[in-house]
Length: 180
Image 1 (tube, rainbow, N blue to C red):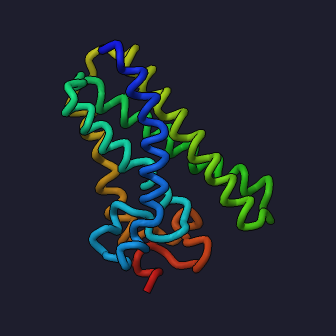
Image 2 (tube, rainbow, N blue to C red; image 1 turned 90 degrees about the horizontal axis):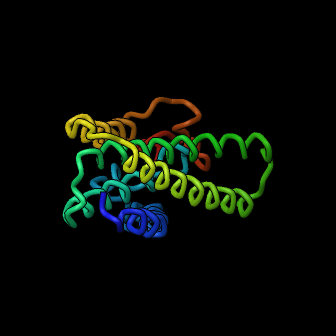
């Protein structure tokens, strides 16, 4: 693995955070263009906020490939990193919601921001650790794991289950149909 890999992974943390934060608003900024719905959070459900981490990770992974960091275990390591991010975003949201159920909008926003920073940082460090310790992971398996969320986001954006995870915390709607 190249010497600069840790520097790349650490530098990616603020890039993911900034890109993810911008993604949070892109659907609204676009005039709610349905073509962006798979890529941008379309509502304030906890699930939709996973897109804020996933797409920047996927794009940065592609950039690493283009920059010549195409090691066989990169997709699997990045997929694992995203899984850590997602688990922390979901888990810490529900923990903080249980501990402070009556938190005001500003407090909830601050908590969500902290959760996002912690989740992205932990996911990147996990991914980096896997890159250092994994042997040659099958490239096809890694690519499948890295790209599988695309299909999951596509389905859940347009046909989400009607559970708390997918419920818009502001409107009570579900998926893109809940916005209309």
